[in-house]
Amino acid sequence: MNIVLTGFMGTGKSTIGKILAQKSAMSFCDIDAIIEKEKGMTIREIFEKFGEPIFRQIEAETIEKISKLDNIIISCGGGAVLNQKNIENLRRNGKIINLYAEPETIYSRVKGDLSRPVLKGSNPSIEDIKALLENRSKFYANCDIRIDTSKITPQEAADKIKVKARG
Ligand code: S3P
Image (cartoon, rainbow, N blue to C red; front, side):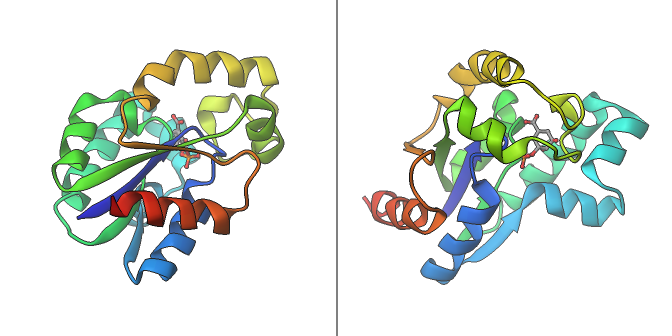
């Protein structure tokens, strides 16, 4: 059984996923990192060169492949949940964890970061983040376990997931 981390950008998926993998003696797979490695380009370059629809197609193919593995922690990009096919593939052998954070917390974590094309460059406003979070809320709600990471450390979040995913 895999543990799948979903959630908006800046909710801690990669950081928490790596800690959780260590604590659980499981391997860690970051879907965006795999895409970057396989394509030899950053996510931002893929968006710029090919556009978002092609990125989403590559993302879906990568998720389909990785979700066939077992006993791994899978960290997905923030938009992966928008495609129901991704959720179906991930759920087949995985518990879906949604990491949540307050828009203000997300803002403080992602501001100045140029690597996230859907946030329109490095300077999104809290309003941009709130609007996108709201648009996506029903997709993020489609999960087995939800953890708010706003006021806890990545270590604490990993411990919570470990306990809850067992049940
Ligand atoms: C995206 C989130 C990013 C990455 C891409 C699109 C999104 O991943 O997949 O830039 O649509 O929310 P992170 O959530 O790891 O930043």
